[in-house]
Amino acid sequence: MDHLSIQLIAGQVLIGIINGSFYALLALGLAIIFGMLNIVNFMQGALYMLGAFMAYIVGEHLGIGYWGALIVCPILVGLFGIVLERVFFRAIYDIDPVYGLLLTFGLAIIIEGIFRIIFGSAGIPYSIPDSLRGGINLGFVFLPYYRGWVVLVSLVVCLGTWLAIEKTPIGARLRAATENPGAVRTFGINVPLMVTCTYGFGVALAGLAGVMAAPIYSVSPQMGTSILIVTFAVVVIGGLGSIVGAIVAGYGLGIIEGLTKVFFPEASSTVVFVAMAIILLLRPKGLFGRMA
Image (spheres, rainbow, N blue to C red):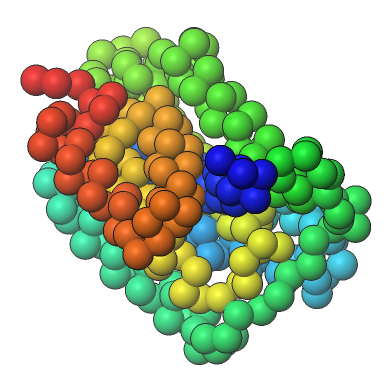
């Protein structure tokens, strides 16, 4: 294999890891919301788009800049999600998840339609912060600083979320509240508040992904729709509600997608769904789903 081929493969793997960083963040939010609240949140793509537009509005027009938007916008998206949870979702927690899917699907269409009316369908550029311009030549591939930053933040957030849910007392209470809310209430724990905060955090992850995506992709009302379909495939492959599954499948499928563009470009848009079909045939609950 010549040097040019190695560079091509390494470049596509890098692109796959970057895409996988967004898949992992979005899938992680979906897994948390479904695993803890039993809601199939079809709004995740719209909230990802909302985070990108908030970064554009707050960062470009209010003068806060990228670094301020990186902190403010996920919080705003999380607060928006909390309002939605209190207004719409509390009545559907104990019924078939299909109702949650239909409700969130309808809300996603409404949100996307509003932004399409206001901003139009064309993409809006968002500049990379000056401190993250340029890149470094690793020999086999050129790594832009900003894309390296995206991967680093995604890894830290995914690992931190897993540790918080699996290894801390708050995570243990949250898991207990999901499985037996009545028993948890007897210990004086405010279960509805925990549920609300969980949903807010899950959608804040989508907002964070949107802010980080804004300088890489153009900000447009359609940006959430295209990535959401792949994200759902990632969640299904990893196992519905599995935190580890969402992270591993997100990065893994991003890399597979990148390599497919090298060896079989015609299949790059469908390889994720082919992988999903194969995994479901072998493990209907997904790679990390609990088998009955």
